[in-house]
Amino acid sequence: MAPQLDQNAADLSNLPREELVRLVERRRDEVHVLTEVNRRLKGYFEIQSVLREIMAFTKRMLDSEACSLFLLDPETDQLFFYVTDDSGADLDEIRLEKGQGIVGHVVETGESLTVNDTRSDDRFFSGVDTKTGFVTKCLICVPMAIDERVIGVVEVLNKVDSTYTNEDVQTLEAIASQAALAIQYVRATEKRSVNARMAVVGNMASQVIHDLRNSMQVISGFSQLIALERPDQFENCEIIRSEIDKLVQMSQEILEFSRGSSITVNPEKVSLTEFVTKIHHFNQTHLKQNDGIELVLEIKTEGLVDLDRNKMERVVQNLISNARDALDGERKIILSTSIVKDQVQISVQDFGKGMDQAIARNVFKPFFTKGKAGGTGLGMAIVKNIVEGHHGSIEVDSEEGVGTTFTLSLPVAATV
Image (cartoon, rainbow, N blue to C red; front, side):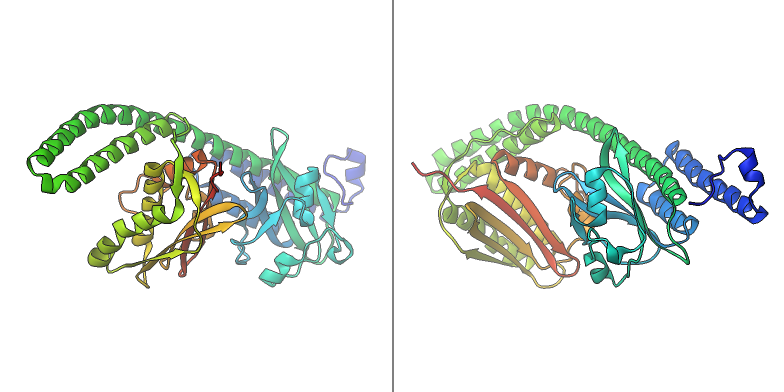
């Protein structure tokens, strides 16, 4: 173990001058990085930029080939690379299960781990090396914790011309502690911001619903008069009335969502084939004539599903509209159904720009919007809320330059 700077004066006086200089410079570097984190916390900063700088600085300070930070995704219980240093490896799509490899082991135990020969440690997972081409020979991995809850880890890899020491572990633990503090600060700030914005949306939605209902009642009344005077227009008037109801319900959903309530659903047994066929019929002509887009319907299964028809129609319509906006090549969207493990699945697939993994992870978060002019960032958050109100789930699978598929999974309707 390398000598510590907090040794007594007698011990320090016996050290060579070069070793004293090294210890002083190392402590100076540690103080610098910790001070920099604290300074950034007092003002505006972009969290990933700050942490990336810290990772690069840590790599140099610990004389290592690479340094990275994993976070634990609370929804999937998987670990993903949140930031890395400037080594340039493509790590966005790599995810590790909790307990997998050294990283997963440290998350589970909450204890730091030094491995100076990965080949002799059965806990080492070589899958990341296989995907990146990086060869991990030795490492330190330390946990990041908030209120004694491990949220991720920081690791350094391959110390140059040496092995890792307890002093290195202590240094990395101090840096990990500051990184966790920075992440906690950002998460708390984001939560306050979202809550404040939700309150504004709620107040606006409440007023809009009041005014909207009055106007919609007038429009509905006149549509009924038209239907009485022109029976040949009855079907069109019914469409007007139906769309009016949808507008009012959409406003009510925004109000419920902004108040943090679960969106109210009134499910009924619906034929899956009839449900998607209606949506396909409603969209195919419009998309073809106005956008040159072919909407393909692929019914791979039939059956009944418990749905609030109006709300789930808006969910699928939202996904089709997003797919239309994302198209950047082949002008085709596929609407399909299937059953997987007693779950009805409805998928909307496009062949557009696609999303990187960072965007895909955030696409269902309130107020998150990317590359969509006029977007509020609430559409996909409400979609997720509606699907979960049906005891279902929604997943996104996307690749840049290839396209995106959103898949709804819903319970098969119980038969009496």
